[in-house]
Amino acid sequence: MLLRISRESGESLKALNIKFDKLAQMMQKTSLDINYKPKIHELIDLDEIPEVNLINENWVKIKVKLGGICGTDLHILALDFSKALTVFSSTPAILGHEISGVITEIGSNVDNFSVGDRVVVEPILGCEVREVEKCASCKDGNNNLCSNFDKGSIPPGMTTGTCKDIGGGWGEFLVAHKTQIYKIPDSVSFEEAVIVEPLATAIHGVSKKLPDDFDNCAVVGCGTIGLSTIIALKAFSNCNVIAIAKYPFQLELAQKFGADDVFLVKKDLHIKKIGKKIGAKVVTPMMEDAMLLEHGIDIVIDSAGNASSMSNAIRLIKYKGTIIMLGFPAFMEIDWGPLIAKEAQIIPSFEYSYDIINKEKQRSFQIASDLIESGRVNFKDFLTHKFPIDDYQYALEVASNKKEYNSVKTAFYF
Image (cartoon, rainbow, N blue to C red; front, side, top):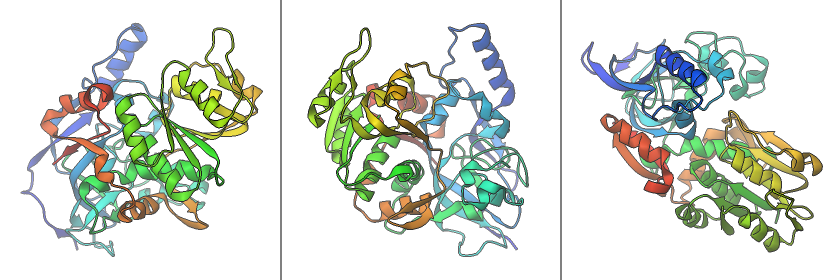
């Protein structure tokens, strides 16, 4: 039996679609002309599409209230993404994996949820969602590292937003497996709930190596992920957090969310200032940016995932220190020499799964939801811009131009 609150049968809905033929065409253009760069909205179309249907009795339908625009989405639209992961995708797909909404239809095999429940969606489409025998990673609780993203009851796709037939946050409705959904606490708004996904990403990264008391931890980049990382570090450790931001308005937010020291990127001046602040030895190689040697930063978290941010991380890290790579670079060309000379290590972090915080193992999403519910931080300040789906071109411009619009998190509302 299916419980239903739905539109008239056959009624079409608006959604932003990404299609293989257009993607292939633009990728071919970039291969023929290295100077060709598509406009941020060229790769997607605002289409009238049929309303999505439940996959089976283990799924629910959700009316999207807010669908966030993530940096990864923007990289896809700019064709600046790893093609290696395209084997785990299917089109036409509706982008958007930061989602808060309301259940409007529920499968007969879904317990503990009801029509009308406010929920967030954990986007990963691992074995449990696909209803196949669990791979080794999923058996260990690492559904983010699933090897079966191309099998099972739905088409290929690593996450909601890269898989056709299930919808995404940039459309009015989507469907989700019962294992993907979490109730939004009564005290938490849809605006706060849409931050659960990036906060879970940050928590998963921070948990890779929780700082010891009074460690110096630098967060490179103060967008949504960087600010979330600052919050996670202050919530789950007693370290000293140093925030490094590209824009002045981000420094103000970093301080508001708990950073102990803030520095604006300005060539390599910030590296020299940080070195002086923590008592590290600062050297400036010939024709290179400055770097720290003795007593550098214990843990550096790169939340931006580009050549500049990783170069900063390598120059700031101490001997045998740890760099956590939260940002998702596709390609970058940098000088790796200082990393090797310092015998520092890089720990990549991808999405979220289970994390151990305070000796308790929980889903990253649950930890993030609990932190938002605690009220320790005002997460309303993250969502700076909201747009109806018809204004998608302007919305993407705002999300892509943080300096001009002072944007942190931009989202579509329905």
